[in-house]
Amino acid sequence: MTGANKTAADYVIVGAGAAGPVLAARLSENPDVTVVLLEAGGENTDDRGRMQGAFFLLWGGEADWGYTTTAQPGLNGRQVYVPRGRVMGGSTAINVGAWLRGTEADYDGWAALLGDKGWAFENALRVFRQVENTDRGPSEWRGSGGPVAMADLPAATSLADTLLDGFTEAGYGPRGDVDAETPYAADRYQTIFPEGYRQTIADAYLGEDVRSRPNLTIVTGAFARRVVFDGTRATGVVYRKDGRDQEVSAAREVVLSAGAINTPQLLMLSGVGPAGHLREHGIDVVADVPGVGENLQDHLFAPVRGLARPGVEGSCPARTDDAALAEWRAGRTGPAAYWQQNGVGFVATEPGLPGPDFELMFQYNPDLGDGTLFTGEDVESRSGYTIAAILLQPRSRGTVRLASADPDDHPVIDPGYLSHPEDLATFVRGLRASHKITQSPSLAPYTEQVHPPVDASDEVYEKLVRDDATTAFHPVGTARMGDASDLLAVTDPQLRVRGVQGLRIADASVFPTIIRGHTMAPTVFVAERAAELLRTAE
Image (cartoon, rainbow, N blue to C red; front, side, top):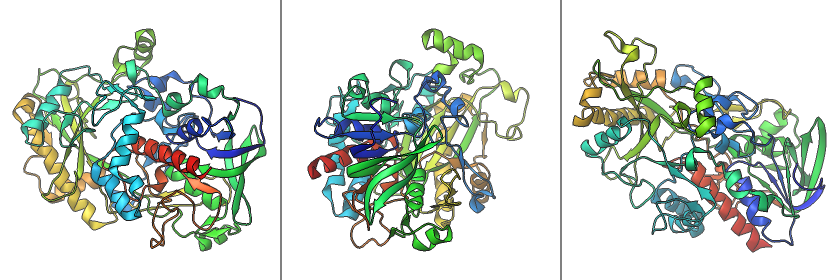
């Protein structure tokens, strides 16, 4: 615990992931207000999460909520693992760390839906330039000197660049910065690993100078159980720490920044949500807000795989054994210092789309699947690559629901993957776009075999998606913003929760629609915007 053991503050923030640290830092800049930040996990002390190539070793441990979806009919009944950070830094402590902001169309689409230009791309770009610290800036499109330090992904092999060359040879766009003027480019994208060491959003915003502020209290190991209401006004939060329930009151506002899974869960546990569902679990209804837990959106991806001719080198197999971890600890080098999914390109598979409908992620190692996809000698020792096609604008929607009124019970997560029939047909186009890259001249030595075959039918691609597609870990939208006409909106454009007072949300759950990119950067934007709105209200 940092700071004094306070029982009251002006602002209480729940969750220290990609949003909570931003809010805590910005609001506590005003010495006349007090801020408490609650985080269910502990401090981020496991150095494996600092390694670009080993972060996933934290999945399933103390730093991960360890969620799993319901069985998904669209994925042949498979359940999908959903790692979510339970640690200072949240999922920014256990993810790939990609700073992929999304497109102009995303933010302008939000602004049009909300009737609020504060969410438009012009404002988002202003914030991104303010918070970024990258050698790609300062420029019209990029910032430098901000709190969020980032760097290009390092590469262990030239095959990383060959894959980007394949993208350009396929006619999809030049080499460039996908977070700049156009996303239609091939990029060694940037991550929050400056000098080979992860800097979470909590690291970026909550340095020692900020943590030492007398008006900021950070409580770790503080599992929020419910928001406290006086009538319909939020007045505080009950949390459990060291086996004992405690309450911190909020004189001004409570802000939920617990993410697209935990925020709707906490709302419902607190009596804010679909009234019928709450009553089923014996929860008193504070406000009937039917959109809580609705509108779950996520990115799925599916692979196209290439296998090199015998004797062609280029891949660099991933390793996270003790020797690899020791090498990183000695000098931040070796297999644990690299993330093999090393490049990205965005494509539109039909003319006239407002933005890309697929993100293609390039991995300089082959994904051999179940071992039966390729034939020939020494398949397991050959080089190769994988192109993962991410469906950026899924039409399918899912839900987050309570399993019970017990906060310790994991919520019921049903993303509804491929529940909209158009998503599967769209996926086929994306995989064919990936296939086009496999036939590029630069990749010829690495493409003796390709799976699926070049002449595969739509049915083969559809089977691949149902068998192999999985999450890109981008759940959003479960407490979406909306204007007065949106009956399923949970917050207004000022992030205020409908039907109650003194309660806002600032995290990925408020996204009205999913971004054509990754979720960390836009969540930081949401948090910065929330801080501006709260300061204006003071």
